[in-house]
Amino acid sequence: MGQIKVEHNAGGISGLCVITPAVHGDKRGYFSETYNLRDMQEAGIDIVFVQDNQSSSTKGVLRGLHYQINYPQAKLVRVIRGAVYDVAVDIRRGSPTFGKYHGVILTEENHRQLLIPRGFAHGFIVLSDFAEFCYKCDDFWHPNDEGGIIWNDPDINIAWPKVDAPLNLSDKDSKLPSLKEAVLP
Image (cartoon, rainbow, N blue to C red; front, side, top):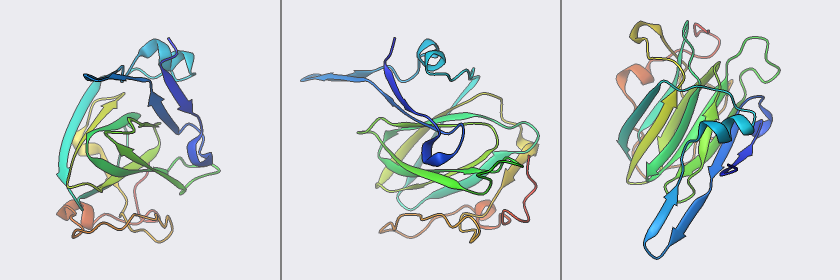
């Protein structure tokens, strides 16, 4: 037990957590327990995950900002290769931090993870030449339940890092509405 360090309420946003697992290394490499339900519960995080996802992207790819409308998902995200700037935006109606975001750099070297509770939009931009991104979800994906907010919404004003590659968005992500226009959970 006790194999994780948790920064609760990251960026002053209730429920958002940055998690750093213990990494045990020697000349052969390293070992890290990336998820342990008991450690999470001991840290006050009681989420049961039901699905694991993985994506790969090249430098300059920006994915997001995504969420599920009627079936919101909590996510535990991490990078296993490369580096990304990962962002969570509070879209919980009535939250004192509604519309606020917190961003964190996740890399294969720092092993950090971002725990994103239900009620957040999520996105990331790839900083390295290539990145592999993994995340756990506490509910299954419902393809007809997707919501999103445009990545450069001036009301959210995310300070995306500059990347020395062209910005690469999907057609869908380039046409997402603003926070004011979005259908929220």
